[in-house]
Length: 470
Image 1 (cartoon, rainbow, N blue to C red):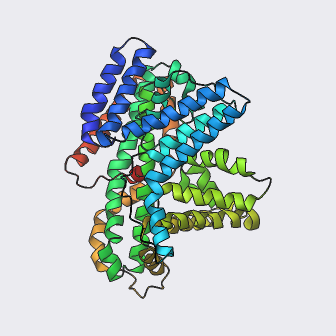
Image 2 (cartoon, one colour):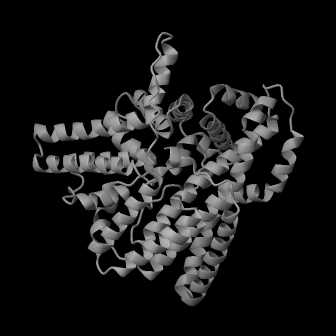
Image 3 (tube, rainbow, N blue to C red):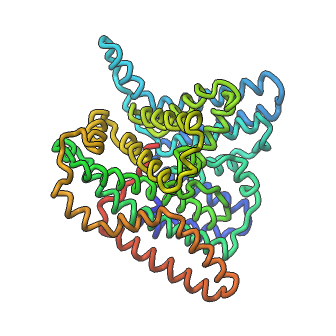
C-alpha cells in the first residue's frame, strides 16, 4: 500500500483517523496507531512484518541489558550483538544475492546458487532506526524504553516506516508518551500531505513516464539522441526528487495529523552551489545518520579523513541498492566531495549561477549512474550525453511525448525553487491577521488539489514508488 493510492486515501487513512480520535487517552491512541501500523505493513508484506517485530525485539532487549548493566562487559556485548544481528539481517535479505553474483563472476569455477529472497519493504529504514536506538542508549544519549510495544510503535509508525525520514528515538521519545493534535496542526498536516501527494502523482509520475520512455531498452538499443538523453536525465532527476520528497512530505503531514513532528528531509537541493551543499539538502536524515554513526566514530575530520569519506560514500551507495551501479554512484560523489574539500575549498560556492549549473550537471549525471543497473547501458547513455555515442542531436520520435508534457516539466523545474516556502510565509501572515480567510483559502486549496490528484490516479497505470526497493 502506498500513500498515493486510492485504497490508502479513501479506506485505510479515514478508518485510522476515526479510530485514533475516538479513543480517549494517549495510551489508547498509541494502541490504535500500533495496530494500524502493523496492518499497514502486513498488507504489503504479510510475512516480513514478523521480521520487523524481531528487529525491534532484539534492539529493545539490548537496550534493557545496556541500561541494567551499564559500564560492564555485558552492556558492550549486548550492543555488539544487536548491531551485528541488524547488519546480518540487512545483508541476508538485501545483499546476499549481490554477494553471490559477485563471487560467481570473480571465480569462474564458483557456481553458487542464488538465494532469491524477497526484499522486505523498508528494511533499510527500520534497521537503521533500531540500531541507532541501541547505540544511543549505549552512549547514554537517550533514556531506555522499558515498554516493548511503545518501542515497536516507534519502529513501525506507518507514516515513515517504508520511506523515511529515518527517525531517531530521541526525535520522538517524548512525543510517544505525550502529544496533542491541535486543529491548526491537523490542518497543517493535511496541507503538507496534499502537497506531497501532488508532487508524487502529478509531477513525479508524469515526468517519470518520459524518463522511463527515453531510457527503455528499446531506445537505448537504437541509440537515444544526445539532447534526448539529456532530456531523459533531467526528467529522471525531477522524478526522483518529487517521488521521494513528495513521499517525505506526505509522511511529515501524516505525522502532524497524529501529533508527531518529524524533521525535514529535503531542503530544495537543486538550488545548491556545490555537491557538498547538495548533500546537506538531500535526504537529510540519511546524511546525518552516516555522519553521526559512521563518519564521526571512524575519526571524522580528525584522522584518516579520506578513508572515512570513502567508507561513508561506499556505504551510502550500497544503502540505495545491491548492485555495482549504486557503488559507482557513491564513489562518484566521493570524488566530487574530495575535490571540493581539498582542492576547490568552496571556491565554486562563491560564483553564483555558474556554481549552480556545474552542480546541477554533476547531480544529473549522477542520477543516470543511479538509474542504470546495467553498466553497459549506463556507459552508452553517458556517451550519448557528451557526444561520444555516434547518435543524432535529436530523435523525432521523442518530440510528441516531450511536447505533450512540457508544461509538467516546466512546473517541476519551478517547483524545485523555494517559491513555495516564500508563499507559505505570506500565507502565515494571512493566517495571523485574517484566520477565517486563511481557513477558507486553505480548505479550498486542499480540496481542489486532492480532487486533481484523485482524478489523475483513477485512470493511472503508472504509479511507481522508487524508494520501495531501499
